[in-house]
View (cartoon, one colour):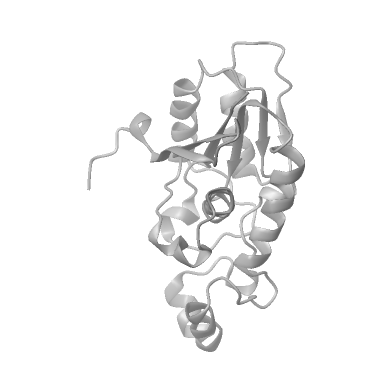
Length: 210
């Protein structure tokens, strides 16, 4: 039986709008983020999820719980929290904008720009670290299941899931855009390689085309 994996990035926070690194900081959804979560929940209300997973940070949990609340089947088990779905830890960059990081930590920023996968930030982690924990999450909680599974996570972590399953080079992550409140869907299993069905789908948010 095929598995359909629905990947959701949490709704917008005030720090998203301000361009601040959030990482493991528990920044709540902004009013617009709550509206995005509600619209996404309405769009997914007819999808009978067999399991819902979420990062433990409140911006993801609020998004996941909004979706779970509109599930029509009362037998659903609610939201399973997993810390491995957290965003990359940016260490001392958290709470800062890119301009502030450039001013305060120019050498570290230069190292990160040279190698955005392997550079481990002071007090934080590297994207390779994120990929490693994502692989463990998928192996333990996704690969042994079938049906329709929902994962609510963060932009960087969502890309890590996507790149692992599709076998893409993580150095390409800067070329992919995953917006707040967006939906990405993959089809797994049935003896074939994972297939990408939707990427950064925000049709439910009525955003203008670029």
